[in-house]
Amino acid sequence: MDRKEEILEIAFRLFAEKGYQVSMSDIAEKVGIKTPSLYSHFKNKDEIIFLMIEKLVGELFDLMRRTLEASKDSGCGEALKNVFFTSIKFNDYDRLRVYRRLPFIEKEDLRNRCIGIMREKETDFIQSLIQVIQTGIQNGEILEVADNGIIMLFMSMLQGNLDGKLLYKGFTNVDEFVEKSWACFWNGIRKRTKSDCECFNK
Image 1: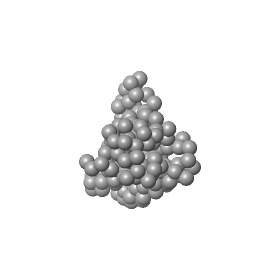
Image 2 (image 1 turned 60 degrees about the horizontal axis):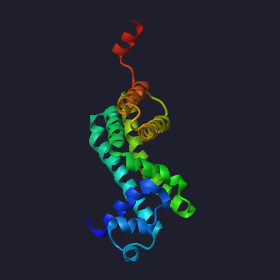
Image 3 (image 1 turned 45 degrees about the vertical axis):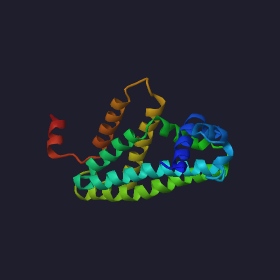
Image 4 (image 1 turned 135 degrees about the vertical axis):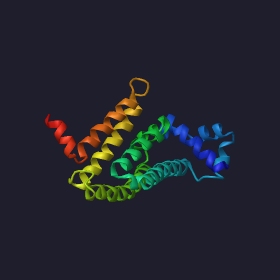
């Protein structure tokens, strides 16, 4: 890891802890260098924060995209399930704390840029998601409902479970909650087979 990467990694941990209140001196102290030396690597604190967020968001959506791509030949259900559980597992406590601090960045320009890069990556990913869902509808795997409705439901479920993972850390069985959320989502959109209907009518 080079010095720039080290600074961004430490900034990530400190931002998770302190939010925008983290200072250049805080970062320099953890890196083990003098504060003025930071300016030989980055223009200011805002640049460090933005590049750190850009890196985090890029890692997340690159992983989601690769997972979707690797799973789509296994069917729509398996692809969505793998993306959902991989995303939940990948986003640890510090990552979730960083995301939740973004709306509270005091500088409007920086706040908009950070949230904007997340929205941009999410929008790109959703385009890939649409293709998988449309294929699932065409193959008779999921119900013929509005594509956008399924996407909004999926992204909302993912966001809600990530919020729960952050909020209820140490207080409840988050894994059980995640499993049940997925089961409810999938049972709500999957196309019923004849045997499903026969079992239901018994």
